[in-house]
Image (cartoon, rainbow, N blue to C red; front, side, top):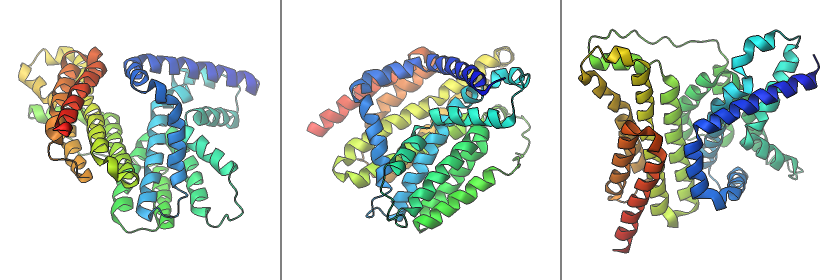
Length: 361
């Protein structure tokens, strides 16, 4: 079988899976178009601006490493979302029936991976159009581009270890007084650890109580927890970098970040809904009190988000302004999940109105 024919087949499978993914996220995408329709063309410019910050000499090593972690985490989450579409996992047995060499298969994987890696592609374009006569000054940034490629590959084939290690290395990048080159070395070591064939064996949980039963159920959903935790940290760090660049917009940045954190935290209720629906017959055999623990994950994530939001030093009244948005979003995620995004948008407008009124007063 020729490579071109194989590539066309893989592209059709990728396109079909992407369409199905867009259908699942159509409500969110609709509101993104409503909110950011005129500004969608500027998102690429914002991404270029974020990559350009890496080359600013006045940026501290901590801020530069924070930006690197954000870029790596963003592209890792995006590839995790598109992993099944890129690898065409549904048709794995079908592909193995073809006389395709492993080199061709990996080559198509990488081509489709680049389609879903705008951060990496834009950075490579910046490097290709840059004057590298003084390459020694830009050597750390060039090393980061190579690190981006390595993390992209590991995120495609081993997303769960990659996300876990990125979360584990954040305290070292954030707390320790590292130089930029040393921080990149730490990230390289974390990437090497993601290649190790290790499996984390969690202790067994005996379900003697409803809480332990739900804990056993939650441990089977690491992707739901890790993806949201990384999204929360990503939003906070982007807000931190934005505050460093525009301290005069601190109140607006903190408020917008709080709304995004509420969206991420309240969406955990959707995962609890899926668990209840999947094991519906089981839950019907027990009292309704067993179902009450389904509210614990979104509440824990909301508490964590509110605690971490204090690091941005927002106004003392910000939690009260965000309370209506959280109550409405969480209730709709529980009772009417099909209207969750629209409800969050309406609740955000309500909180924004309170924010404006208090700001005027």
